[in-house]
Structure formats: structure tokens, C-alpha cells
Image (tube, rainbow, N blue to C red; front, side, top):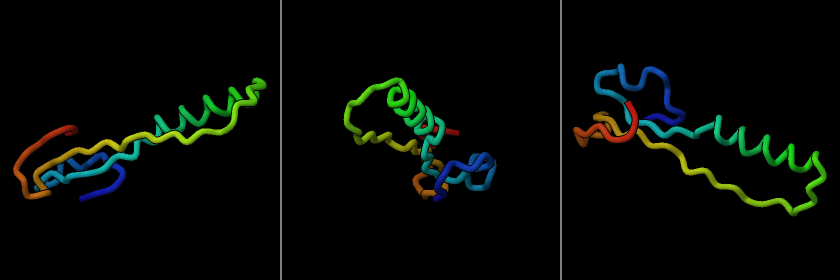
Length: 69
């Protein structure tokens, strides 16, 4: 099991199951909030939760490939 979806996860033997934090989406949401704030939006801060991606591969012992690579 790996955290942060390494680029070679599906090339290993067995392919490695991994959890992806989706940093690009998190950055986009943060930048949008910053731009709204800089534009004068006085709305109170909010909690934003982005679900992680899960790529189940055969390293988990299940013999399935679901999700990513």
C-alpha cells in the first residue's frame, strides 16, 4: 500500500494499491477561495473536504484491479 499514487505503482510486481491525495484539485479549490477573498468576498471561511482517490491493485491480496492503473 502506498500513499500519494507513485507514477510506477502499476508497473511493480505485484501492482501496488495506493491512495491519492488529489493535490491538483486541492490547489484549485484553495486558489479559487483566495481569489474570491482578494475580490472582496467577506464570506466566512468554510471547511472543504475532497475525497482521496483509491487505486486498488493486486498488492492488497485481493487479485482485483479497481479504480486506477
